[in-house]
Amino acid sequence: MCCANAQAAECVILLHGLARTSASMEELQSALVHDGYSVVNYQYPSRKKNIPTLAEEEIPLALAKCASAEKINFVTHSLGGIVLRQYLSAHAIPNLGRTVMLGPPNKGSQVVDQFKSVPGYELINGPAGMQLGTNAESIPVLLGKVNFEVGIIAGTKSINLILSAALPNPDDGKVSVENTKLEGMTDHITVPVSHPFLMKDTQVINQVKFFLRNGKFSRPQI
Image (cartoon, rainbow, N blue to C red; front, side, top):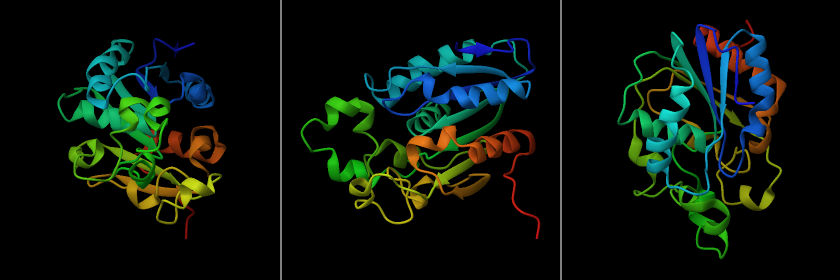
């Protein structure tokens, strides 16, 4: 199911990561529906197109499913955040609300730098996966500063020691904490969760809901 609570005033579009599907975002979808949002859990062909094409062809289709909403929010995992940034670099969403990015390679990932020339890498990760490095031609690096309200959640636990060896610590096994950061971001926190499980973690889901409501993450009162 891609959509729920279709009449809610606020819509949340969920964008999964590279080589994942909308099924990876189902826990988040259920939690946000429970909170009263209209939710579009949008599946897109992350391995078949480059980032600019994904942005131009897929984001409008997701937005169309929120056409009746007064406000449109986004929650993205990994590549999903870069596709959204690419779209917003060229287009305005007049009723854009808040965005939460989970493990986004906002400054690219050294994993791509090190492994993109390995046989089979492009076959597995597609053209978008080849555009997520840290050099001057990296799509995330070229996109630069953001001018919309965005909170970023970065993981600090890895279950892939081979990939982590290519990354500055701390990292989540795919992206370093430092490279999730973004000039112009509203808030940033870290959680002890690995990259593939960020969108399923209860603490992360609670932080997503808190940011969408309050425009900041929840922190212990001192």
